[in-house]
Image (cartoon, rainbow, N blue to C red; front, side, top):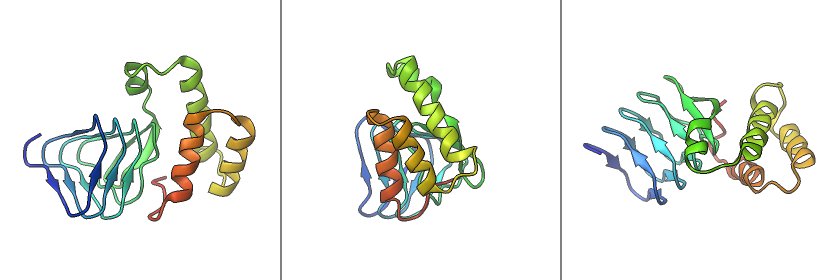
Length: 145
């Protein structure tokens, strides 16, 4: 949309939406189907996961986990992006698994390595959970929590 700034060496995958006045500094990576709402600056080397949505006027300086909805002056993942996932054809089972994975990561006080272990045990064959785990392990800036 209008007045979007895309800095040096940014990558934006397919079907992403960037609202008015979104600012991506250098080396930002936005995975497929992500939405970044208006007036949102994204700090360098941050990754926005697939199917994630960032609320307007949020300041993003850590990675936003795939499939989540993040918001706030210091953007933190608020929950799973259920509306967006339903609109994109995710099954209720897939959404239920993502909700449970979200709780394991964000609501139970687990350290990330413990959360990853629990998710691998509980969802050994879920491709969406595998993508979340890979995203967490590849994070250089940390996950917004």
